[in-house]
Amino acid sequence: EDKVVQSPLSLVVHEGDTVTLNCSYEVTNFRSLLWYKQEKKAPTFLFMLTSSGIEKKSGRLSSILDKKELFSILNITATQTGDSAVYLCAVQNTGNQFYFGTGTSLTVIP
Amino acid sequence: DSGVTQTPKHLITATGQRVTLRCSPRSGDLSVYWYQQSLDQGLQFLIQYYNGEERAKGNILERFSAQQFPDLHSELNLSSLELGDSALYFCASSVGDVYGYTFGSGTRLTVV
Image 1 (spheres, each protein chain N blue to C red):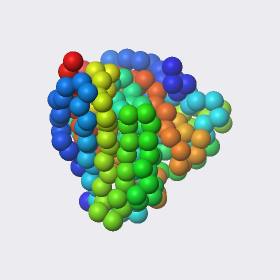
Image 2 (cartoon, one colour):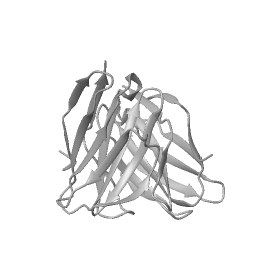
Image 3 (cartoon, chains in turn yellow, brown):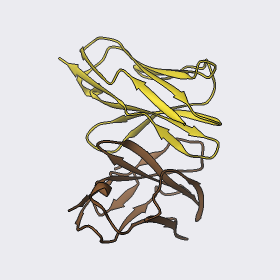
Image 4 (spheres, rainbow over the protein chains, first blue to last red):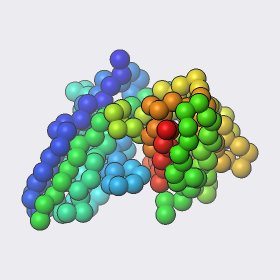
């Protein structure tokens, strides 16, 4: 059965801390892995990863994929209260189907 | 405003009824994706259309159907509604299959 597992489920940190969110997957015919940030509205797209070992970076956020070990990490450095959200990981297969993890809830306290 | 428009924003209906959710993709986007987000099951992919044709199918129930029209807007039809169908239904669009996906703000369906 195809599945995506995210950990931890929930995380509370202080502003300025660095966090690492994990996403492991077992999906047949992998095509891409995507990270989204969801606040109290629709998910917003962060990164799409298709190749192993190539880090994608956007400001304080970065992500990398390991297709051999079947996982990805999302790093957020110097966290801010505005980073508080649920971070979703999704894997797309070559049939264009998506499998989502249950998300990691991040709370950043001042 | 993401450029993906979903209507209505909220919908309350009784069990056994049928509803239609509408999505207008971002200008220039050919692909439309439908997702269901419920409290107990997280975000689930339902179906994708590309330029009017069904491209991929996920966990979509037989009671649900969708289509994409020549002007690229899409409709998701939910029939014989059950309490468990209460959820947030998102539409997303993209240029093709392999680029970033932009989500609409969702339609919250409550079945009573």
